[in-house]
Amino acid sequence: MRKDVHTDGTPRLCVSCDARHKGICGALDQEQLVALAKTSHKQHAESGTELLGDAERINTYAVVLSGVVKLAKTLSDGRQQIVSLQFAPDFLGRPFKSESALSAEAATDVSLCTFPKAALERLMQASPELERRLYRQALDELDQAREWIVTLGRKTAGEKIASFLLMIARNIDPSADPDRDSANFELPLTRADIADFLGLTIETVSRQLTRLRADKVISIENNRNVVVPSLARLEARAGN
Amino acid sequence: MRKDVHTDGTPRLCVSCDARHKGICGALDQEQLVALAKTSHKQHAESGTELLGDAERINTYAVVLSGVVKLAKTLSDGRQQIVSLQFAPDFLGRPFKSESALSAEAATDVSLCTFPKAALERLMQASPELERRLYRQALDELDQAREWIVTLGRKTAGEKIASFLLMIARNIDPSADPDRDSANFELPLTRADIADFLGLTIETVSRQLTRLRADKVISIENNRNVVVPSLARLEARAGN
DNA sequence: CGGCCGGTTGAATCTCTTCAACGTCCGTGG
DNA sequence: CCACGGACGTTGAAGAGATTCAACCGGCCG
Image (tube, rainbow over all chains, first blue to last red; front, side):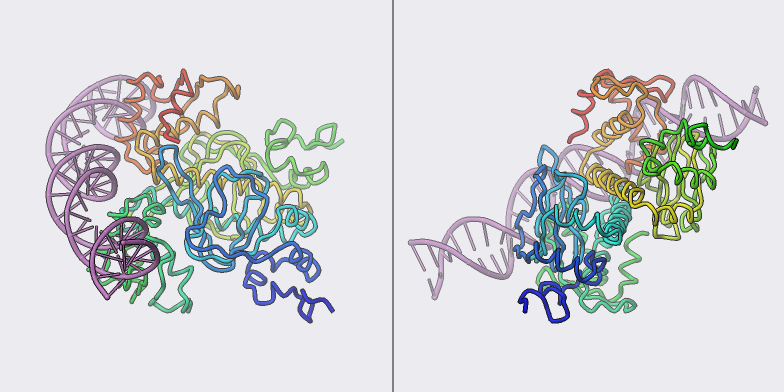
C-alpha cells in the first residue's frame, strides 16, 4: 500500500488542507489531486523571508496554507508600495507570464504548498474547472485591488487605517462568526508594512492608531493584538 | 443567401471589428462567432452617458469598439474615484457576479458591441479558449490595477500626471509606432476626470499640466490635444 | 447678450510628512 | 548579571505638498 496517500485516496499532504476545499484544489478530482500532490511539497518560511524577487523568473506556483504574504512593488528611488496581501487559501502566482512584476515576502511566518509551474499548467489544460477557479480568484483579486484604489486615492489617513483594520478583521479574525459585531485579532503587519500598504508614513500610521485608541474604537495590546468592540463603529470610520 | 453574414461566413458586424482578432472574439471559431453575433448589436453612447449604475443588475456584457469607458466608485459622501479606463478592444463585464460594484460611464463618445450575459456564458462553457482569453484579460487588468495602486499610493502629483499621460499615450496614440519617442494624442478625459482618476483635485491637475508645459515636456492645444516630443523625458517625470 | 461649462491661477489653509527625540522590548556579549 | 545595541513603536515641532476658496478667462449654446 502507498504511504503517500490516505486510505480514501486523498494525498496525505492534502487531507487536512484548507485549500483542498475552499482553494483551487477543490476543483480537482481524486486522480488529479494525486498527480499534483506528487510534485508538490509543503514549505515553511519565517516572517521577512523573500519568497520571490521582482523581475525574477517564476518556475513554481504556490498556495498559501497559513500566514500572510505581501506582494509589493518598489520604485527606483526606494519608495515601496504593498499592492496585495494574500491569505490562506489564496493561490500565489501569475499564469501566462514567466517573469514576476512584483516581489513577494512573508509578512508573518508562512506555510506554503508549492508545485512546479508546469504541473499546474498541465492540469489547467485538462481541467476547465480548475481554470475557472483561478479565473474567479483573479476576478476577486481585481475587485479587491479596485477597492484599494479607492482607499488610496480618496480616503484620509484615518479612513485608510480604519479600512485596513476592517479588511484584516474580515480575513483573519479567528472567531470568524460572520455576524458578530466584535473582533479580535493579531496584526500580521508591522507599522512599516501598514504604512507601505496604505501609502502613508509609519508616524502617520502610529498617530492614527493612537487616535482610534483614544476614541475607544479599538484597543491594542503588545503593539499587535487588536480588539474591536464594535465593527460597526470601526466601519463608520472607514468612510465608505 | 443570408444578409447578416459575409461571404466567407464571418458575421457582417464582425468583419471590420478589432476585437475579432485582438479581443475576446478571437477565441471563437466561425460557428461560435455567428452564434454570438446573432444576439449582439452595436451600440453608440455619447460622452457622459451612464452605461451601468453601481449596484445595478448586470444582464449584458460588452466589448469596447472605440472610445474610452471609465469605471468608477463613489463613496457615500460623494467623493469619487475612477478605478479603471477601458479601451478598445477590452471586454466589459464581471462574470460570476450578478451585480455591479462599479459604475461605468462613457468618458468619450463610445461604441460598444453588447450581447446578453447568458449568451457569453453559454459560449464560455463550450469554449475553454474563450474562457482563457477572459482570464488573461482579468490578469492584465489586475496587473494594471496594481500598477495604479503604486501610482496612487507612492507618487507625487507631478509623477501621477506624467504616469497618466504615459498610460494614455500607450493606449491611444494613433501613430502607434511602438518605438518612436514622440507621441501625439487627444486626451479622452476632462480635468475633472483626470483628477478622479489620480486622486487629486482639478486645480492640482491643472497646475501640474501647466508645469509640464512650462518645462517643455509636453505642449497642449485646445485643452485636449497633447504633444509629447520625447516620451523618454516624460517617463523620467513618472518616477518609476 | 448672458450664463454656463471647462480650465487656469493666486492666496490661505490643512493634512500629512519630515526630522528628531524618546520609550520599550529583546537578544547578545562582555 | 547587566550593559549595550538594534528593531519597533510613539510623540512633538517644523515644513512641504496638496486642497480649499475665490477670482478670472475663453468658448459655446440658448
